[in-house]
Image (cartoon, rainbow, N blue to C red; front, side):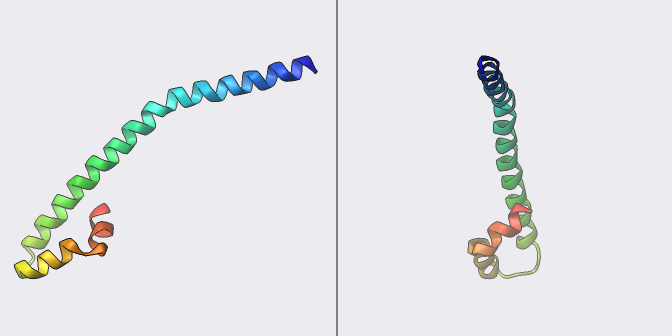
Length: 73
């Protein structure tokens, strides 16, 4: 039974080490995603502004809930 307890501790230590190893990578990936979404937002805004829509129509699109989904792609 004592060996089993040691194995659980080893598994716990392994999980902790993996979390410490991948945690910073996940954080960087989240930052990258935020930067990419910002870039897409600006790209789509520019495309909308040059699409032939009126300024009012562009404003309506930029303020809509659907625009978040559009600019995330």
